[in-house]
Length: 222
Image 1 (tube, one colour):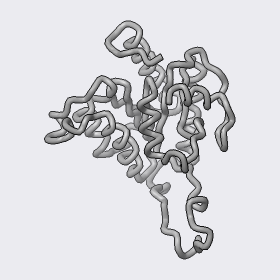
Image 2 (cartoon, rainbow, N blue to C red):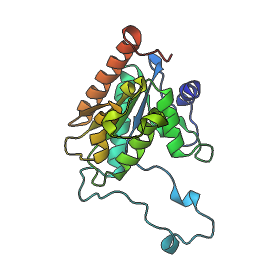
Image 3 (tube, rainbow, N blue to C red):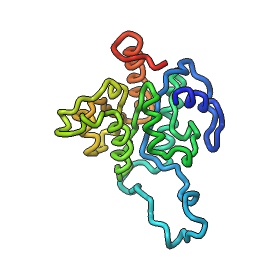
Image 4 (tube, one colour):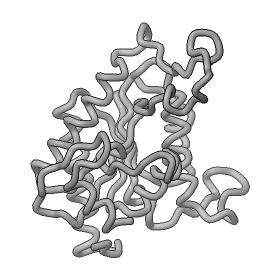
């Protein structure tokens, strides 16, 4: 999967746009976030009445959050571009361009996280944070073997791969899932104030992991 990601990031595949080359091509940084990009209409039977037969898939309460869906995607893209300017091969799932009929979105997230040197979940205040728990939870649970998932969260023994994970949130975000990140997975949780600060925090973490690969205890993935 690593080779496929690196190869596809340089191509225009489907709706994805080719990304310019970076200095550290082999250092993959997978950025996740609570945004929606799939086309519901494309997944429905041809005879479906959109007006009457389709339930609401909305998980956004834009009245109680500071961000709308487009704002979150823009924040992720700005962070990706900023990290790429610093030489890291940062990407979003939509940049890889794997069709959903080949691999569903949740499976893609797990595969991308497994293949990446760093995985960052960016969680701004968007009102309804259900998506935060679902997406980051599925990726983090994949890190733990089944025999470590029983009993209290604090008793779980996370593998070294959790050291490559970070959740970066606005200070106002509150989620039970985020509260468990330290206790169960021993992953890093940081806060940010704006897009510039988000990039700074992510870049610091990427540099830390890079140093751990070069001089510390983490295995090099390149």
